[in-house]
Image 1 (cartoon, rainbow, N blue to C red):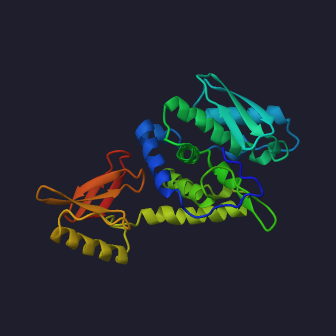
Image 2: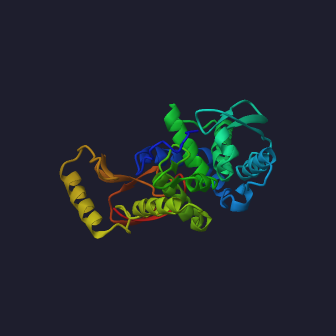
Image 3: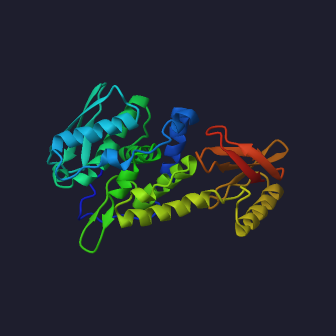
Length: 300
């Protein structure tokens, strides 16, 4: 897990958004919509609470057990230790059922963020057991951050983000705004409001920016909720595709027109799971995503 030490500049914005969306798609493919919906309730703040008066090792084990239960790994046992290390945390991925997690020594005195570090590492165990991984360390860590958040434990990682004039801290590989985006995507699916859980003002700000991006996904053509300018651009691109079959898709828009036989079709990402949907260009239609089964109102 990335260190996010106080001296490290914090990257903002959405530089990993494509990988984040691919991670959500991969999660739905691996778990199925029914499997994803078994995580409909987020980890409650009390399960990750850790005061300075708690015994360090007993408290860490308690939080780890709560996360194991939340992530539905009942036959996994986490052994948590602390040592001097470059990164925030690490886990030894084995066949189990016992897994060894090491946390950076600085968490001895930054106990409020132990839950965040453990959430990421225990999600590594979940993904290992599911056989779900992305090629390359960075992409795989983004997958882990995304799944941790989408399954209801990653709000801890966003809440660990703090930034002021003299210090800064961020855990994980996603930017704060990307954590906010995934958290908002989850909130839209499960009708959940995570904002009361934040203790960090910077985390709340990042969540609002991520939520704005998630809401923007719901208003992109050919969805009927698209704004006027988006609809005008879509109509112009549709006319061009009809007059120039076989043209290359414009990478600046989320949709692409395809000619299959004599019928023009449009493909676009589902705003929930981000798998691409293909529909004939016939006007208004109600479509259902074949992966997450979300119903979508479209005007193709």
